[in-house]
Length: 507
Image 1 (spheres, rainbow, N blue to C red):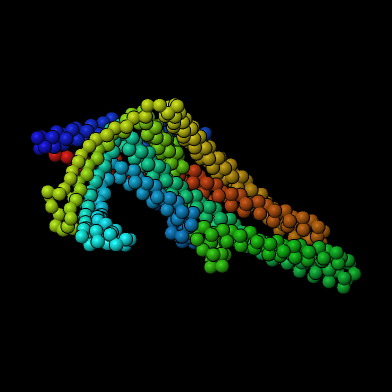
Image 2 (tube, rainbow, N blue to C red; image 1 turned 60 degrees about the vertical axis):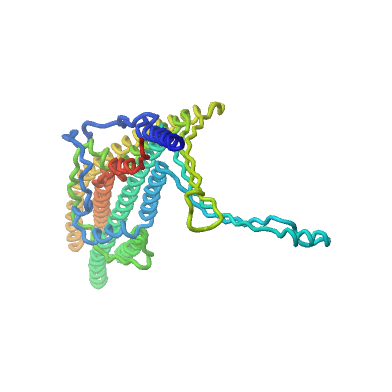
């Protein structure tokens, strides 16, 4: 009879386990919501939709700039940047949370070992009659050893745990995208600071060269003043000499002042690579070369290459799965429990005759909670639709940023071409006026005005080139830098976790 009862209990447990493994998961299955996608970009005609390219490797997106200094610095971001390090730690935490949820699919077993010593008999002390009774009936001591092993298993019949695993997996994938976004953002910030620093070097070089040209004008003015003073013609006055000298000194002061923003850019770069500013010194170098031709693909790949868009999409699945977690509260929790215990007067060896075993199943169902479950389900659905709106807004923001960068590159390129012609004309005007000044046909003020205008035009041209480099960095960042999406853990890894569930024997 006991064996038959045991077989029946095993059969009942096996049926419940089969129900748990084959049970449906409550809640909606995930299907990505549609996001705004432009068939073409207004700023770049000819772009069209293409097949997904999420497997593309980002590589070194900064390589087309062909700048060895930039390459050396950007490679240190992933290693030493503390914001990236914090995001990496958050990603590892998210992966650990997945394993925590997966552990709920398996039984929990506990073991113990207890020793109890009991005294039975009269107490010592007191009257003489008690002493006589205690001597006639001495106390007895009993030692009992107990070694229980118990196990519990909450069957995931309604898929609550599986939905939680799905949610945690999507959250880990979003954290992975956040890590990539942190890397890309830090790299873009460093590239921006680097090109700003090189622009400062170029501005200082321009001011230094211009100061040298002003010095030659000062020398000509002094020579003409000395010659005119000696001959009595009065060609130049002391005021002309003072004006030429002031122009030299003012340009020198401007060149010195460039050191302030340059030092700040250098300090920012040090921070981005995780080093104290005192440990980094970047040698001066001009802002040379042109912006690279960006190997842009198509608008559709923007949804796959940008880490922030990928993170927003993964957050949608995370919140969608949590709807199922909330809906599981409508159904009863079913669990199995078992216990085997040894109870005997000696510690070892254990005797099967003194073992006690039991197995059982239980189910609990909330009958009334004042609408709490319905409210939690409604809240989960609301959070999901909030994530949908955030996802769509992130996509729109990405499309806007691409358009902004493309517009900036197009317009700045046109402006730089025109500005270069203005610089050439202004330089020719300076040369003509300087020759006329030496011939005594124009006043110094005419030369000074032309030289100040030339410097202004050259500074404007340098600023436009600087803005072009920054716009190119913004475009690469807006396109995701060639981000490669990965899924951690993969669906195959999740399926493997289910296959590891132990099977109870059947009759």
